[in-house]
Structure formats: structure tokens, C-alpha cells
Image (cartoon, rainbow, N blue to C red):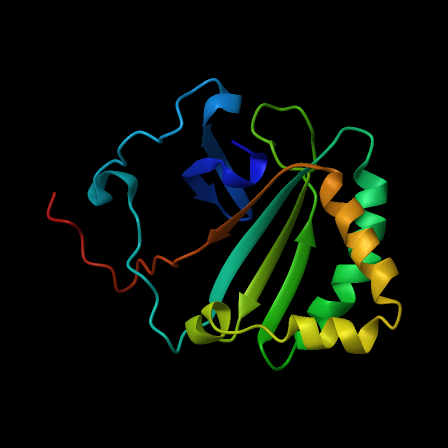
Length: 175
């Protein structure tokens, strides 16, 4: 099983980042399958957002030790312009983060990107990124080689589409 095929379960979320992520699979010392999820009422999963509401996705990266600056340089050079080109049309916000501390037992990610899409349809629909890349980067061979290098610098990468919980309108589960 490759790092791209890992199964993850979000343990909880606080403000900016994921409180914990469990990785399941042989490389994590477990089995290939994740345990059965807890009931919805137990883990507090929100209902899917409506199609007309903005949709935020957190993209987490774990960069190999000592390679953070190289990864950030390549992200800034090759991927940041592609994201910026979509602001105001497909995307309403893009924010990037690094943890304040490392090695505290919870920071299994070293770089995160929070992307807010205009709506669910925009998030799940076709992406214009290929056309944007062709316009922004005349030397496609160099672009592809640098993007390959950027992903080779990773130990792990995962995406967390979020559903907002509105406690002003949420009805208690009856407890």
C-alpha cells in the first residue's frame, strides 16, 4: 500500500487544524481496513453542506525532515500562482499554514492549505487547473519535473473536506 492509498479517520477538529488523524494500513502497523466508524451521534459529524454554501477543504502535507524550505519554494513557485488565478471565480479564499511547534505529538502535518470553494458544485466539478498551468508555465517540462519533485518531498498528503456545524440552528440529538 502506498502513502497515497492510506485510509485516515479524523479524530476531531479545532479552529485551524485536525486534532488527530488515525492512519490505517500496513505501514502504520495496522490492517489494510479502518475500523468501523463510530455512530454519527458519537463523533458529531455534520450533515453535508447545501450546494449553494461555500465549501472549505483542508489539504495537509507531511514534508520529509529537512525538506520543508524546498517544498515551500516549489509550492510558492508552481502551485500558489495556480490557486491565485482561481480566486474570485472558483475559489473565495486560500490560506496556508505551518504548525507553531513540531514534534508535540499532534502535529503530524508540516504544511496545510485551507481552500474555500464558491460552492460544493465548484469543489466537486471539473477544475480549470490544467488550462491555467498551460497559460502560466510556458516550459511545461520544467513545471512537471518540479511538481514531481515537490510530491517526492512528501511523506504523506491528505484532504479533509469540512462540513460546518452551526450551533445556532442545530437541534440536539435528543440526549
